Image (cartoon, rainbow, N blue to C red; front, side, top):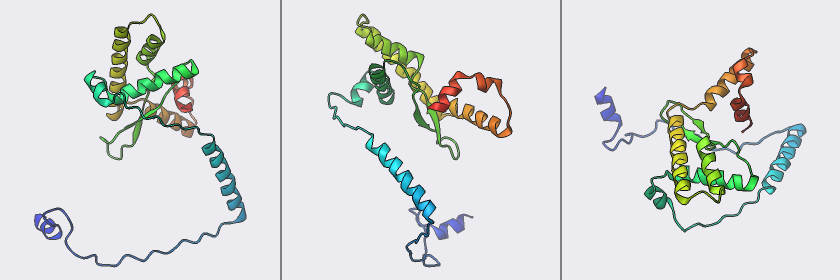
Amino acid sequence: MFFMFERRYKSDGHCIGIPEFDPPSASKLRWELPDECIQVIEKSNKVAQALLNDVDLRLYVHDGYGKGLMKKFRVSPDAYIQMALQLAYYRDAGKFNLTYEASMTRLFKEGRTETVRPCTIESCAWVKAMENPHSSSKERFDLLRVACQVHQRGYQDAMCGKGIDRHLFCLYVITKYLEVDSPFLKKSKALTKTKKS
């Protein structure tokens, strides 16, 4: 076995040898689409363009501080940004909202993503303290640190397969496929909110 690998690969790991066949030359694909299909494509394109035109994006360069300060305060930069988004949304909308952040599940074969929910009891407590003029800076900072720790733990749990969104969604899909009623899934407010976000 070792002899086989030794003959086929160089010491740097690259393959030895010349391909036994030439790759086929590229050719342009020519589509023959019926008029009905072209109309659907054009209609979808108009919808997509309308959505694109409805976006108002402004970029601001913030150079007052960066991740170095966050790390100095022993706060995860990702969690810090997620908390800032929670505060910004609350100030804009006047309420909390179920928020989605993707977490990679690369620890598992064919792992894709799991959901992290930045809007937690702890993040809400911090946001409320930020909006309360009677809260001290120390109280706000302590609540921020706790909210960031909870977020970081949730992110790590999601990476390790301990998330809940994908599990609940799969159970929901299976019950629909098998046409089985699940009182738990029907009554679950969390699942209802999860499906909407």
